[in-house]
Length: 313
Image (tube, rainbow, N blue to C red):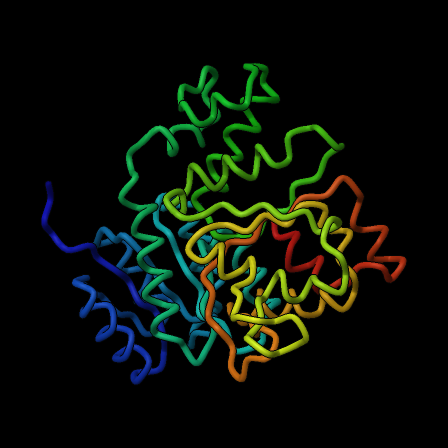
């Protein structure tokens, strides 16, 4: 086994942030190289081999999105995360669409960062492997997990390759299709083939929870927060911590819950009913629906900002 520490590239133009990130990652036993702009980052990528890259969005000589796109094209097995300004969810979504593995907001929460890095390094440690080979869309894929998706037609092989590729990202995925077409199977495979496979996979049918119980079911509650709350209770997000939460029939979410869900996705934290502070959660969101969401957005029945956030891929 190779005991050489894994190598991380940190790209940020602010010396204080570079120093903080370098110190944090070094304490995790990682070798760290820092760059203050795109040019320096590109030179580092040409001369060294990295297991993970963390880049700021705004750099003196360009946009961090350009670096994400270049890494996605030229170093497809290198997980890259984007540092975005607080509340700039559009930047995070664009980064994920460009091929970023995940994002973290400023000011950087070091506990969130450590979890993100550990997840990224799990992906890196899988190389080379069956999952990475599946991305090449080779006929006759042999991965046992992917064999749960039966068939060997070009369309099915393309679907398997897409699932294998999505498993390496933390981007939200919206799975659409008729009832019974295998949406949950696809979501479960994305979970099983990814770095969260040893964490929980929690599917929830959004149309099956009574509206008045929905907030408690999703986010939990504290003892005494309402009549009948005899003890603290964790919600579905806490149950899925470290794993994946699948929101089945997400189109059935009422508007007031859509607002709360959007905040949870942006802040990576939940506010249990009756709690005084948010609880951090490390959850990947996969959504599924048999209804077309775009018309619901146009009719005002589904929030456009939540649609934008869920429909990254």
